[in-house]
Length: 392
Ligand SMILES: Cc1ncc(COP(=O)(O)O)c(C=O)c1O
Image (cartoon, rainbow, N blue to C red; front, side, top):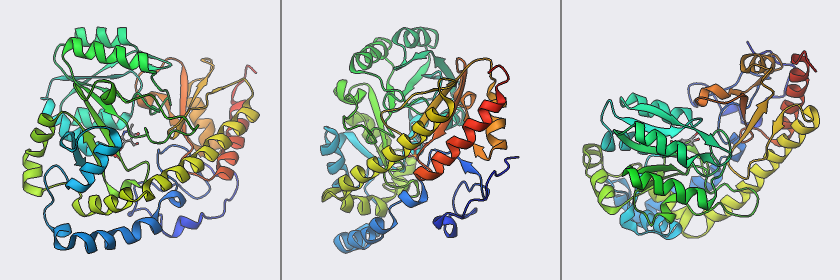
């Protein structure tokens, strides 16, 4: 059981952030660095509030009808312009999780396999296994999956439905694959004739000014890659809105699945509300503000951890996304690291949750607390982990 070290004043959002309304609520006093969520204060309530009225005014009853199966054209066109493809290559989704579930049913069959990076977004694995797919891991390095490991995994898994990769601001490791690496991965997958599902949930959250390399989809000219985007990390997950980019034939196939034919385009009214935000620059303004906020949080956590832990723990500074991936000396076990953190009133995500790791790791999210709380969490962790290590 996590024991609070200091009594913390309730966050201003406590009135709203309630169990039974949102997915995760931490016990009072515990600083939870586990979930990859935006802090409640970073969720744009005031910005989103008028968007529904704007959409209803502009589209009238059509905003409350069944939406076009692949999503409403105004949003598809905006997304296509933004991501350098055609509107026929874009489908509106109810977020990456839904898109992935749809792809598992459309591309996979129970018993077939999916090749993933050895350490990857654990909940994506859950979606795949829910569909009876078998998850096969490929080894990775500081740029994500290694092309030779992907080649080996695909040679062994001749029934692979797709390869699932997060080449940009990876969850949990924060890594980014450079352009040459991306080209090599594309060549390997093309040689095996297996599509890549590119999970780009964090792609717009570059924190150091320079954007990431071109997406796999862009490098492949849209062939053989299905790119998944989400507004969950840039606006708010409660919108349940995202998009996918794929070859027009696949978009058409997906849009003709029974779920879409029966229910129409996903989150139709919300998609029109977000159209209002994207078309006049308000989305880009929001993004640059959010990047600044996340940069403050990342830097506060990295600085406080480095100050408290010195060289004892490798604390890499990711160029974007939500997460720090800490590497501990192997003499320390993951269970004792996590237990010491919990005793100090800080929750962390254990590395093994994300698949096979080499060494001892934990993931810390810097997205879910303001900088002063992150600094306090780091101070608690440094004390706890220094006391935990008997060999120091
Ligand atoms: C890599 C990755 N993909 C997808 C998601 C979930 O996306 P969505 O909320 O759009 O379903 C997350 C959220 O943690 C994530 O880290």
